[in-house]
Image (spheres, helix red, strand yellow):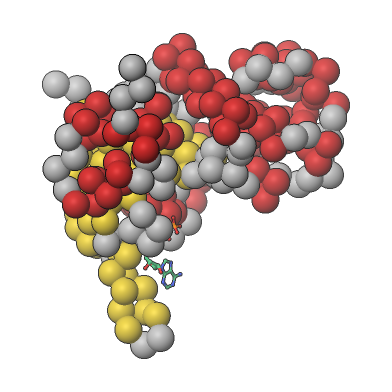
Length: 260
Ligand SMILES: Nc1ncnc2c1ncn2[C@@H]1O[C@H](COP(=O)(O)OP(=O)(O)OP(=O)(O)O)[C@@H](O)[C@H]1O
């Protein structure tokens, strides 16, 4: 069997809160294969964002190990880490916070292409047009300021920026939670088609099981800093084994009712 693209082994992280230690993550392990989408679902406070911040090296772990593309991910620092970041990209909930809102779309997309040396300068405009097309935006959006775009369009630009560096893994943390329901559906369709066309693996994090179900091959359920259940997406939704999984299924009426 191929080694996992990403393997997270026994990661723990505690925070001091009002003099008390809160275990945000307690021995969390998971794997993601190349081209696979793993949905990570859990109630507020279950530890999802702490895990994504550790994965993205925004926060250090107290214990545990992470291997990414065969390398000891937590041991990388400096230039080797900066280089390798091209391969693991992120999309967050609030695209406006992730961009300079005064910048144009083309500047937002040019930055990763330039910083990571993806294509030479003379080919960047063409690459930006191709990225926009890939996320379903007209090429003339390149000249628009980010602040003039709708929430869904901004999230498309955030996805274009994330795939610009040709990553093997996207970490999406509540990436569609701020969008209204029709825009959300279209962004989920875009993510599934990108994943199929380009074979990019995704860690798709959300508190909303219906959203996770729409895009994931497998689902991991978090509760109180632990992964309490992992399985094929359809099986976890149809027959959750954990209390937290059952509670999340019950919270989504259309997953438990049969309209036919
Ligand atoms: N910087 C911090 N200082 C203290 N406690 C923290 C900190 N960050 C997270 N925590 C605590 O760690 C636990 C996990 O939080 P985390 O944000 O990872 O959960 P989450 O599942 O992402 O929740 P949400 O969906 O609400 O963001 C919570 O009890 C939270 O209060």
